[in-house]
Length: 369
Image 1: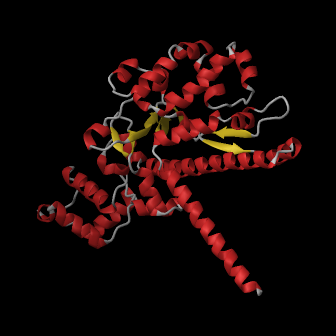
Image 2: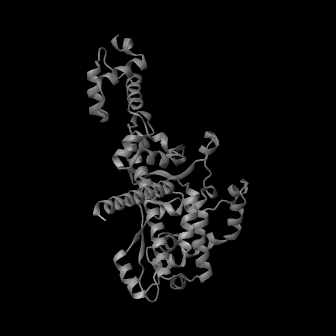
């Protein structure tokens, strides 16, 4: 048998594997926030995950968490507003509240800093018994705190019911509050509503993991289980990396608007352009921004896709503002406005686009007088 058919078969298998990987990745990106929270809870409850994260007496930690830059957990997480939950019809919320009743007092006792350091971000990875002894907790109390992070963290309605869902007729999941740093008003940061967002991504120490596998002498079944767990970690990382890139890029482009609340300070950013900048397909961006919302610095919650603005819409906003301010000289030409848009707003458009926007605003005759 010649090598040509073998090569063709190998290429066909590789293509099928690539397509399968893309389908799996697309499915994970399309998951809702509660669905992902359940996947995270299942993953992090696995004893093998716990061993990789916290290490053991026979070996060090082989897994880390890496937080997103300029981010934190929404402070409402620490409130667990029972009055909000009581107004809902969800039995799940009432069950979770009852199950974790009194844990906020326990967290306040050990201190918010210690809670975030050890239970939220796992900045110091220690076996749970050792960690509980250090914090003067019983092991059951430590387990309940970990369960709280996984279960309650998936339900933002505990401390922040969505307003978009009621007005838009669709169910949106608010993933973050966009905030201005009071110490540096030009700095924008995120307060994530779910712990799996605030925690960032996983980092597997693969070199140390190989040594650990050899020393442990894993059976075939154990190796398959480890591969499955690592695959889930990689998929979660892929999803969160993609979504965070999209979120942070949108917020960076619209930072002037978010700092000022002035519509004319929006900047053009189309779905296709965002996809090009990040290096993903437009369909991936579409799935990522769909049904997700953010809370703006002034408290308004909007669908994330509303921060994607077409170039012509932005030009109309800017020209309309200039017109209202009387900041248009009589006899100004399209070329002059085109250059001014480039110089003052960093927006490069064609003269034809400027002309069309002028006519849409119907102020050509006004500008001549």
